[in-house]
Length: 376
Image (cartoon, rainbow, N blue to C red):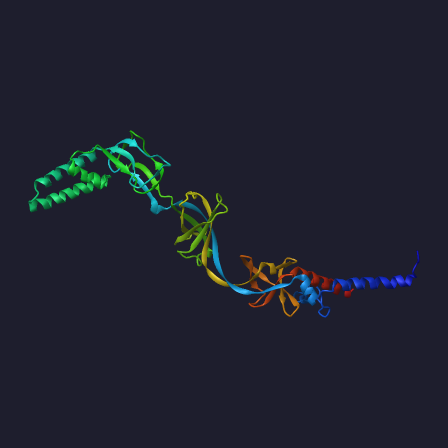
């Protein structure tokens, strides 16, 4: 094997590395040096690509633009019964429970008979109504007596209705004057029996608890709104609820109340959201996490792909020339459908690189290293 003189080998090695370095930087315009990373100048450094470099890197850009951002506040809470659709049925007269026709958990409709009570007071009032009705028939055609009879009849009728008799049942007493021994207890709304307090044969007094009914087609989410968020939330705002039972599903409602008192312990105020529950998935007592609409604001956004991480700092590359791109440190905020809010560092209309940023960052770092070697 032919040996070369030692001086030729020593001259050839630097030339080899110079050629390799030139090949690595073929995509970068050598007329635009890059400052040393970590210095104040490096934050404002730029890189200029050749036309071939722009094509090879697949550089794509998009201007920073303002968008309307719907602000939302977060709050935790619990589901409760809608108190406007919750009723407590009690005995309206002393008596004995003859039959119980509904128990806890049953779904009932308005007007459905839930229990039957034998009541002496009910029998007495029916007899009084029958007597007054017969008296009115005898005095028909006597104007003076008719006025008195009508007043007595209306009074007896009203007292029967207050006991729970239906208008049809009272009217039937006039046509067929036979007292009914049983007083029905009817549901006053359509819903679910959530409490049943009596059994057949029980003795009841005036006010004895019989049933508790709830219409579960709407519920209240009682939220704990942080004191710092009070200025942003208003009654009428839309709300979105999430539960552990259905993590992938949002339940929409509306904020119907913002409380007037701050809890001294938690520094929160009650926020009440009314939420439809036609499918019955939501249950009173469930914990919920809510997002409540809190107005809108205008903010500057760029595509998330434009944001690069550089040693823990968020940066973008701004197009400052035909093929020149400048590194810019930015402060980001909220994310919205693939876009990132820019809180600081950009102005509207500035064009940022959305594809190819990684190559620009690599070339800039390479330039910095070369600059360091040049100062050795």
